[in-house]
Image (spheres, rainbow, N blue to C red):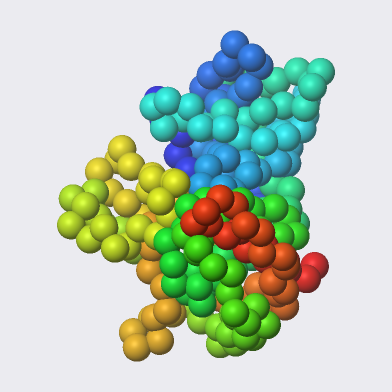
Length: 240
């Protein structure tokens, strides 16, 4: 039985019920429906807690398992809930929302730097993208101003779904060379920023995002590091 990904249905949901359908050999908890995003695409797994009638468990992260299941990782030494019990899931919302802001900001960074992306990572206060960029940018401050201007347009962030065959027929949608779009269900989720003539970005993504770019707030571009002959790593910071 797979896990229903509630975070894909509503990234702003902070609490939900779920039923324990499996306990892994290493003590992780598998629910029938998960509010917790599982580590992937450079975005860390969510943290929070599970509550049930006579117990509680701190969730330190979430991981993907085979068969579309998601395993919740307990804090060391904490006993998991029993198999079959219904639990209340509560997110560490501030951490999740920070990841949403950073993730959406990185999509916009790939707009102002329209080069192939070879890697990326997300944290609560910063993120980074690795670009196929043999030479460092001439004017980092101009890139920062362009990125902030996109954010302040307060563009809507929405999603569409296409089949895997449609994605294969449109390879230009994939910006990130190191991370393959999530597949296996016969369809692929696209994250769109802007709409109509104001659309600025459209790419496959399974992560969580803010509903409008204005929620990102103020950003700052950090250092640009050389990573090999062809690559540059660009850091992005967001205000709390």
